[in-house]
Image (cartoon, rainbow, N blue to C red; front, side):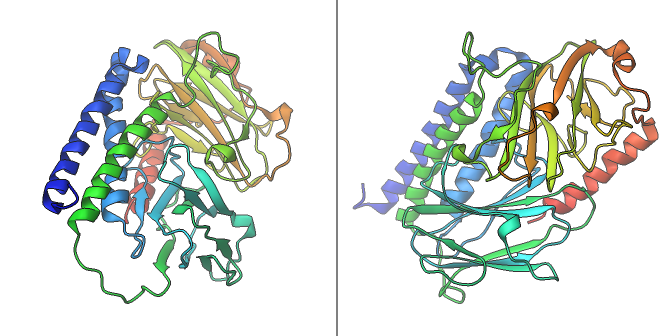
Length: 399
């Protein structure tokens, strides 16, 4: 069909439609889909994956890169409520300038990936916040190129395909997120015309391939396997470990558990300050999409948590408000994931004495399982708490 660009583009659109049907058939046959509470979220996950795949493959040009913004509008892909993800395509072996200005970010990390996979990618480069030179006014400049250039330099090997920025927020204030820009060097003032049929056909097919790959990957990530030594535990937290080899951030510790509670139950969760630049806990559904976090408190950073007199963070995970300041709201979802992230504590072994703990209790007996002095909250304060989250995330989701 290459000799007839119009027909090839039309065929590519049909291929994309077929990929959509194949993705929906996959989730409908998945074990998670058996529970009624997981069905709408399955389609929400597919919508988020599709939007990202279409933007990255049909709108983002590696010669004239712009950011695909992954935030509160896209709850999918093991996303982090405390991060604003900026991603664009680049050409391996070419030179790019990335620059911007920090505001109230806890950290900003830059990562380069090879290939087209977006779910379990291979990293070809990482520049951590600790290693980045930032001016006193918050401005920074990073060069991504085959030859060393500037104070902040990242090699761009021939197989590089994408660059990802993680803007991380500890304190969800109303301040606007910092600015991050990118240009391919030598193309800053070049003329870019409209789409070409052959390029659009290629992009549609790649978007369909990404859709199928990512829907399967996120549906099966941390999947519980009966009688497996590596099954994700239920209502118990395993020791945190690095996920860099699986495409995660460098020097980040993560851990996951499946929570499973009935309407009259809750989980009492205890975790500890670890001294890094960022740490947080948040809830996901079984498709590995964050629960709604703009208008309900399904996530908490270390700075957002109220510490108890013993110095640790005591939280309650439940379907309704227990009157505890550190509440993790499930929104009524009986079974999902609880995830922890720890950044900036280096590559030293995680303190085994500070692995988070979970205890299932009856909702009416929560108080008996919390230490004296556990911070409580009134309904008016909770309303203000949610309103503040909404203001911050409205500002943060602007492109």
